[in-house]
Amino acid sequence: MRAGYKKPMLVAAAAAALSILGAGLAFASEAGGHHVTPPNMDLVYRLMNFGVMAVVLVVLLRKPLKSALGGRIEQIRSELAELEAKKAQAQAELNEVSKRVSDAQGEREAIVAEFKAQGEREAAKIVEAAQALATRIKAQAQFTIEQETAAAKADLRREVAELSAALAEDLLKQKINAEDQTRLVDEYLAKVQQEVQ
Image (cartoon, rainbow, N blue to C red; front, side):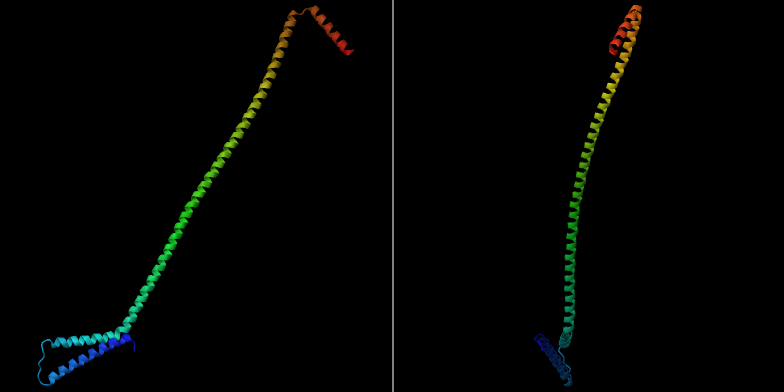
């Protein structure tokens, strides 16, 4: 027998002995024909019966109660361990989500910076293309102006020459007489003869 069961067994045996002794005394007092009971004896008998019943219940129900309570304790421990595991898992998931949020924020900032840099590069390209186009347009305009100016000058010279010739002709017509015409024709013919020879 284990040491844990010796003490309850002794208590149960003592309680049983006391109850038997009490019952024997009760029967003995009745057997003598005298029925004299002290006023508190009934209470004593009841307390002894209760004690015996309590000891018997403790001895009989100790093992099932212990196993039931032990099972409940184990169940509570396992539930606590499971809750701790769930808490650790939830903390890990929270950390993962926090990391993803911070990574997403950093990634968003990198994307915004990249788009900003691309926008600045595109703006610089557009400004450069606009400046090149303006330079070409300016050069083309300068060339066109020069061509138009040259053409206008040529037209003006031609008109001036034509007007001068017409004016000279008119002047010559007014001032030239028949002698001058003959002399001019003779000079011209002499020049032509010199050229031919």
